[in-house]
Amino acid sequence: MKINVLTLFPEMFEALNASLLKKAFDKKLIELKVFNIRDYSTDKHKKCDDTTFGGGAGLIMTVQPIYDAVKAVDPDKMCRRIYLSPKGVVLNQKKILETAKEKALLLLCGRYEGVDQRVIDLCGFEEISIGDYILTGGELPAMVFIDCIARYVPNVLHCPDSVTEESFSNDLLEYPQYTKPYDFMGLKVPEVLISGNHAEIKKWRKAESLKVTKQRRPDLLK
Figure 1 (cartoon, rainbow, N blue to C red):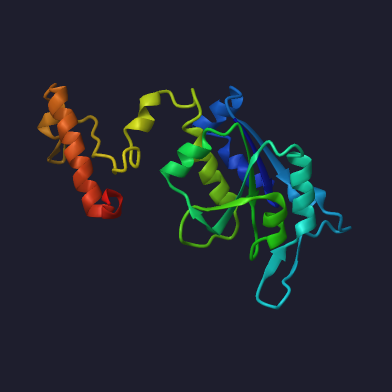
Figure 2 (figure 1 turned 180 degrees about the vertical axis):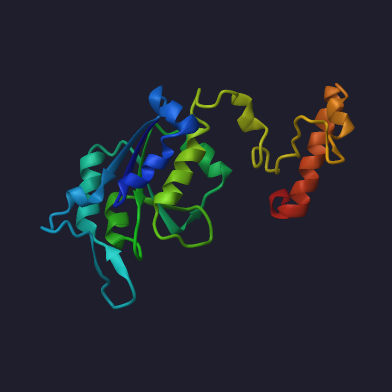
């Protein structure tokens, strides 16, 4: 998968160069390219923001640098174009699975009060939000999005079955997990998990998933 990112702060994405993602980049399973929007500004000072028409607090990212960056990075419209925005559809597992099938993505990270609406209209960006809260920019949402998608790229995870037995994989939250020691400060691992009876273990895990989901996210059961 090829992932292109447009941002005013490309250095932030160095944080992704670690752990499983670094291995995925090194093995060319994922190709990540980060582009600085300022490089495409025609302003002599490389300015990429201005005041908003109609008044209001804050600045808006201007259309020209972003438009030219999009045309330079994705001239043949081969990428699915996504703008990380609090106005977008809230990200969930279904959206991740759908997007993970794409061969190429172009992610736009906004700043200040957002981007000129004409960027979205002219370039065909869909808007996706990672939650009902506001951040200082779209870089962290883009990194969250990349991390989520990477787990579904073939050969990125050491254990492919991991993605089928985790929270949201079956519209349920994951069951409790335990490891050694068996007894820690009086808290013991449930007996069923050391019974060796795989049918009973499977039944217990399903029941626990249902219980946790009902307690914490009953909306998922609907």
